[in-house]
Image 1 (spheres, rainbow, N blue to C red):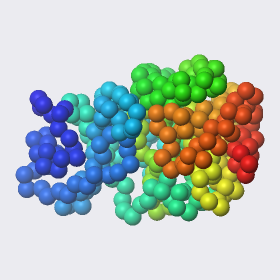
Image 2 (image 1 turned 90 degrees about the vertical axis):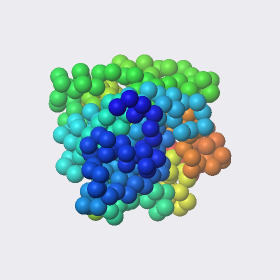
Image 3 (image 1 turned 60 degrees about the vertical axis):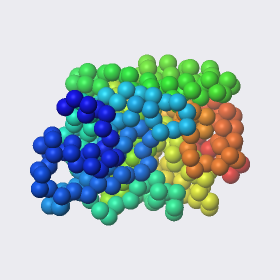
Image 4 (image 1 turned 180 degrees about the vertical axis):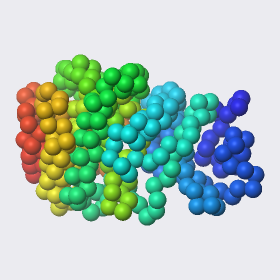
Amino acid sequence: MSGEAEFSIEDTAALRDYLHRTGRMTQGDAITARILPGGVSCRTVLVEFADGRAWVLKQALARLRVQADWFSDPVRIHREAAGLRWLARLAPPGATVDFVFEDPVAHVLAMTAVPSPHANWKALLLERGPEADHAEQFGRLLGTIHRAGAAQAATLRLEFADLTFFEQLRLEAYYRATAAKVPAAAEFMARLIADTLGHRETVVHGDFSPKNILVCAGRLVLLDHEVIHWGDPGLDLGFALTHLLAKARHVAGRRGAFAEAARTFWSAYATETTGLFQGLEERAVRHTLGCLLARVDGRSPLEYLTPAERTAQRAAVLAQISAPPLAVRDLIAIMTNASA
């Protein structure tokens, strides 16, 4: 297997040779391979076999595909593999795909493909706004993972204890990078980081975003688990709410619908986790503010926001960080106000 770490799964000939050499397809098998768009941290390829099987292969990149210099060890793909195996037990049935194999040398992970037809939820939200059922599923899915993860703390606290990739891909790239760029937010971000590291309570996905959700036959399917860790559930809530609130600012005429989707998401989540995490709602508010600012001024800005929308989002966050609201619903109201 020497030299295998250098090959790219986006090279179809090299991929076919790799699958032959590793015994994952025979010489007589026919495959088609198609590069899947959208990810910044991995090469992602859909492989379809003549017998009807379909896999998605991912290969972690050392340098992420963003404008800023952003590096992370490709071995993080194996954290995603562990996340994929565990989420099959923690998430509702059908909400994740099946693990197929992982390669520790080439840093490749294979999983079953979501059946067609399906659509990316981020694309649907940008095209036509939210649907209430999807927002409710989004909240129930996250709440179920957090509740089930906390129930297996003795095992999962050890399985996902390492914070290396969370530090690189979230705390450093989002919160610390933003603090360096926006001095007015530096103290807020420093407190947020300390608070995050002080509340390690359950399995945290770390990338709970509409871009990592496919909608298939009306059901949400969660993908991309490379930042999974044992940590602060408020981070997942802030990450998710940020995407709904940022799109409320961007998608013309749908601000009210996105506000309602954010409320529905929060209500569904809270129903699944009632009384489980002390002080979580206040931390969720602060994480939402931190993520909203990071998606403007961190290393991975939201590509769809216009310059004017980024300016408005930054100003709305900076107006709140000295005295954040205590309730998620209050923050939603503030951030979706037409003048915000």
